[in-house]
Image (cartoon, rainbow, N blue to C red; front, side, top):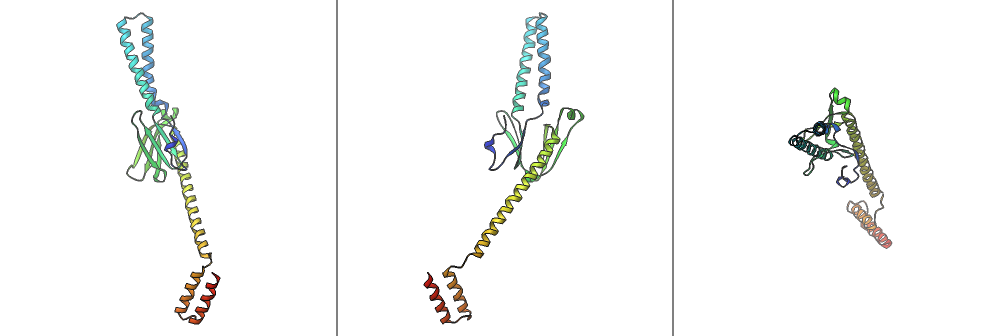
Length: 217
């Protein structure tokens, strides 16, 4: 099940949504297959009922373990959006980590020779804040995910700079409009009164100009 779009913020987009590598469930499959083969061979050779019962119980337990492991696999979301990195896991109860992209400092990946062959590995995200470093194992193609996280960080920075530029442009436009707005008649009268108080114009000139302005209202 993919990441629920309802959990996204406004204008936030999902760039990457992956599950753990399929190697996550291989150990359980490696147990189930031999047990079922042994059960089939024992049944074909006419083994005692008690032996078939014991092997059958073992096969059932192995199948239930595989089903539980698969449910855990489907319950993991490793998500990269334009705002944050999200990791959620769990079947009935959920646990999660969210790291804002602007807090991420460095992303490391580590793979063994075998993991490189199957496209798996471990990923470490170093971020500012209380979380410090977060480690994620059984990551599918960790090198590509590292690149995707860095790409998301660049997109986030671009959007942030664009929003700041729009805000500055809007503020400049508002200031310009305020400066260029013609003075109202009461504001002109107030300026004339200040000139009168400072002695730039006489009382008679003030009253004449004031009467002229009031006549325009």
